[in-house]
Amino acid sequence: MLSKFRAKLLSIKFRAIRRFVITVLAKIPRDLERAIIFGDTLNHFLMISPFRYFFKFKVPKDIQTNLYDLSFASPLISASFKDDVSSLLQWQLLGIGGITYKTVLKKPSKGNLRPRIQEIRYQGEYGILNSLGLPNKGVEKFKLSIPNKKLINFNRPIGVSIGGNSDKEYFEVFNSIDRYLNSVDYDQFFYEINISCPNTEDGKCLSDDLDSLKKLLEKFRNVSSRVIFVKVSPDSSVDDILSICNILSKIEKTVINVGNSKYVRASNVGLTQKTFSKEGGGLSGKYLYKNTLKMVQLISSKYSIPIVATGGVCSYEQVKQLLDNGATLTGMATLLVTDPLLIPQINQRLSNE
Ligand SMILES: Cc1cc2nc3c(=O)[nH]c(=O)nc-3n(C[C@H](O)[C@H](O)[C@H](O)COP(=O)(O)O)c2cc1C
Image (tube, rainbow, N blue to C red; front, top):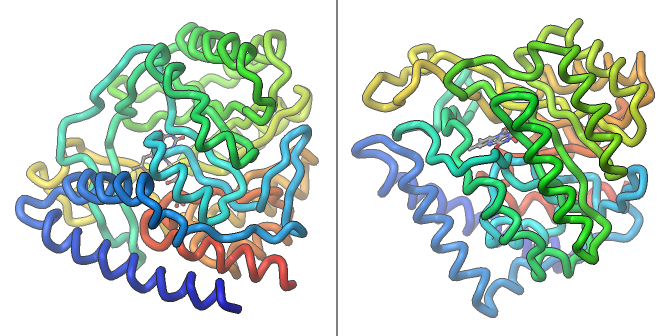
C-alpha cells in the first residue's frame, strides 16, 4: 500500500519535471533530443546519488517469468532503445523484469543529422517519431561497457540487440559479442536480432530477405546456445511475419518480438525539413498497441514459439490483455520515458490478480 502511494507520488513528480524540461528545452528550435540529453544527465546524477533508493521497489515473487533458461523478475522488459547505464539502472530499481541494450553495429556511428527525434500526435495519440539512424559506439567499445556490475547485481536477463548493414556484419557483431560473453561469469544474457532497421540509408533490411535470415539464424545457433529473440517491424506484411515465425519454430531457443517502430512520413505528423532531418522515421507509442495485440493473437493461434509483445504498451490493462492472449513478456520503450513509475504499479497489480 505504502509503495503504491510512493510510486504514484513519484510518478506525478517525474511527469511534471519531464514536461517542464521539454517545454523549456525542446521547443525553440524544436528538437526533443536537447531535452533528452539534459534529462539523461539529470538521471545520471540521480542514479549515482543515495536518492536513487527512492526509485527502488520490490518485485513480487509470484510474477517471475521463465523463458527457456532465462528468469525474468517480471513479464515487463525494457525494449531496445537506450544503452546508458543510468537509464537501465533506474528501470531495474523500479522493477523491470529484464533489460535490452540499444542495437549495436560493428562500427561506431553518429546516426542521422539532428533534429531526428520529436514528440508528435499520430491519429490523435501521443507518440515519438525518431530517425536516429542507430547511433552507437561500435562493437569493440560496447564490449568494454558490458557487463556492468551495477546491472548484473539484479540477476535479471540482459539482452544485446544486434544490428547490421549486411549478413556478414550481423554475424561478425554477434560472434564477437558471443565470444566475449562466454568469458564473462554471468549466464542471463540473451540476443535480440533487429531485422528491421528502417532508418538506415539503403532502406533494405534483413526482414526483406527471409532466406538470408534463416541461414543467418542457423549460423547463430551453431555458434551459441543463448536465447535469440527476433524483432520484427509492424511494417512487415502479416505473411512475412508468419513466415518468420515458421522459421523460428524450427530453431531452438528462439522468440519472436512484435515489434519495432512503424515508419511514418514526417510531413504527415506536422514536421518539416527544419524540425526533422529525414523524410520519415519510426513511430513509437500508443498507436502501435492495436497492431501489437493483433499480432500476438495471430501468432499464438498458429505457433507455439514464445512471444514478446512490444509496441504501444502503456497500461496494466494492456499488459494483462497481451499476456492473456499468449504473450510471455511485454516490451516497453515510450512508457519508460513518459511514466516509468508505472512499472512498480503494474507489477503490483499483476501480483494481486
Ligand atoms: C528513441 C528510440 C530509439 C530506438 N532505438 C531502437 C534500437 O536501437 N533498436 C531497436 O530494435 N528498436 C529501437 N527502438 C524501438 C523500440 O525498441 C520499440 O520497439 C518501439 O519504440 C515500440 O515500442 P513503444 O511503443 O513501447 O515505444 C527505438 C525507439 C525509440 C523511441
